[in-house]
Image 1 (cartoon, one colour):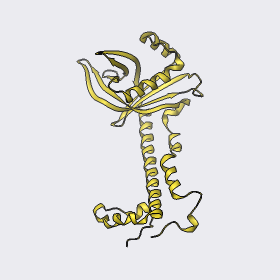
Image 2 (spheres, one colour; image 1 turned 90 degrees about the vertical axis):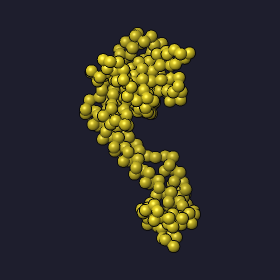
Image 3 (tube, helix red, strand yellow; image 1 turned 90 degrees about the horizontal axis):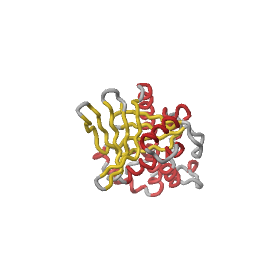
Image 4 (cartoon, one colour; image 1 turned 120 degrees about the horizontal axis):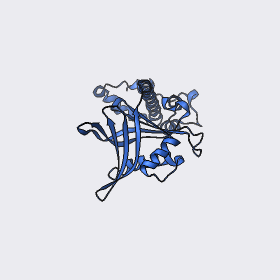
Length: 249
């Protein structure tokens, strides 16, 4: 079987190292820099899926839409550095199950002072990002104790995210953040970005498969033989993954 041609080999960067770099150091910075959430000088502080309950507030009372559903929570700040005090903090919530589900909350110092007074918070505005990030992590790691409930008002479309901590059959409210449904323009831009991001990840995965195939062909080509022998069962285009380097015996 054919391996790397001599002119393509690089002893300083063997295929094993290329595979490790491809897996551990994916470069998606080009597409990530086009994230519409970054407009107006915002920078991403936190970006994870957090298990939340989703409810719809109606005249008859709250209606459950989903329980412990992984909603994408994106926390952003317009501060110049992590140590600097932000002018504004933005929280975005989106849902993979519903591409039109997109809510935004923007908190500045004035908004925060109002929250602090109503909710008896014992932190200052520069600590707000850390508080939101910590509570989200608590919801991920200890979902039985820390619970997030996202409630949508059926009448005006606005929403609120309430974080509570359960203890001894009691619930202690940790934080409440008011949200507004994002504009159609923001939702459209977010959908286009998410599509482009997934497409970019797909291309990256194809690259990893190609490099992995090259490593197998270089180090242990006999591993490919069982795949060739059973190819009719899987209907695989082997050469598509291994760069036209595979020859059936």
